[in-house]
Length: 94
Image (cartoon, rainbow, N blue to C red; front, side, top):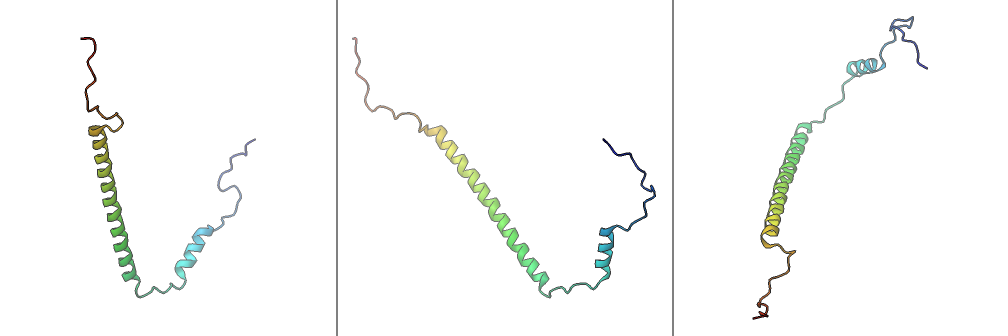
C-alpha cells in the first residue's frame, strides 16, 4: 500500500528548517575564545602526524623488501626439498 504523492505546498505551513535555525543561532551568538597556543599545538600535532606517516611509509617499504628477500631465498635455496646425498649410491647390475 503506497501513499499518494502530495505536492510540497499541499496546505502545509512553511516551517523553518530546524538545522538552519540552529546554525544561524550559533553564528549569531558569542564566539568561543580561541586558546592562544592553538597554532603552536596544531603545528606540533601536524609535525607528529607527518613523522608517524613517514615512519609507517618506511616500515612498509622495509617490510616489502624483507618479503622480497625471503621470496628470493625460497626460490634459490628451496628449503622444502630434501638435502642432497653426499655419497653416490652403489652401482648394481654391472
